[in-house]
Length: 411
Image 1: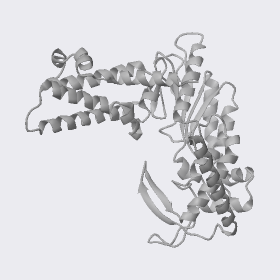
Image 2 (image 1 turned 30 degrees about the vertical axis):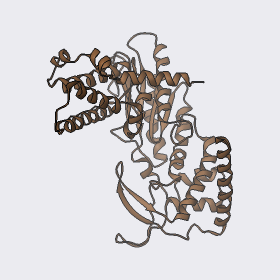
Image 3 (image 1 turned 120 degrees about the vertical axis):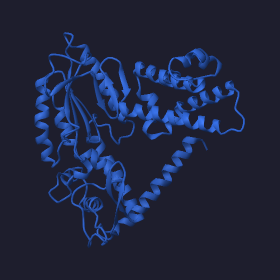
Image 4 (image 1 turned 90 degrees about the vertical axis):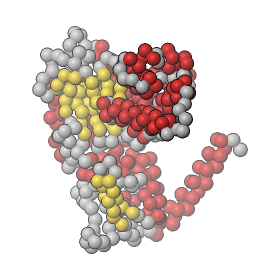
């Protein structure tokens, strides 16, 4: 049986098991169980639920139903938790739109008015009481009363009595880690998505609660900003004051068209990257620092291991080992295993940032090989030696290799 045949067989077995489990749930009541509550420090301090195994399966079934019903109604400008799309698509979508919009500007010094929105504690602030707009949205998808009660009980379950008190429910915040959470997070802001995209010639992209809105007309952009607070208040949400702001995005980074709210900038930060108005997509400062510091630690560990050898190595052998460490660290396979840097070669399109990184790696390598600092190291080990004699494969080499492979497999 070929791979396609195996997949179809697994899908058939999964569908039959799902139907059997759903039939068993017919007599199950949404009030038949309790959950245990515990805390964990993830991206921030969060409360989590420990649910019975059969309840987790129920959550999974309902999440599949939710996804099937929600997907047709979601805006194509929502890129989170959807098959075939992701954060990179949101970034590239804005970059392509922005470049076209900048080229349409009649004079130099003009740019685009950009709004960066972040909903304050989004999933932790979604209301779950009976008056919450969430339940009306779920009901409008066509769910029956029993399924609606199941969804309510799974998002605000009864917590077992513990040291903190007796049995209780949380009436605000959808539970972290639940299979329902991604679908409900996409659904709850769908009315806001529809309102923003109703504006003529506006750009909009949302990933979770991280939004970017852009327009070439200041009056339109400012109107959206002023009305957004009221629109979110209807959902009992608010914007994060430190992460929501306006930018006048222009290649020069300065313009008389900017003002106190739309401050001039050549870069727009979105989803962990910077979009430069002229040179393209680049990693933000924090991620570049993580990448560089990781390499310095790798280089230091390699030097420490070499220093512990009983007999010193020949300089040529030592230099080859150091270069192999660099090749291994900056290889796509290694970076893919690092969550924070997994898509480095997919994200970065700014050749200038790659050149800066390449220069940094070459400088640290030659200094480690020569045992001296500064430009004196290049007098002992040149770039030509790094590449031809020791086989150094620079980050730019891997970047071009990745791009050529992607172009070969493009439809």
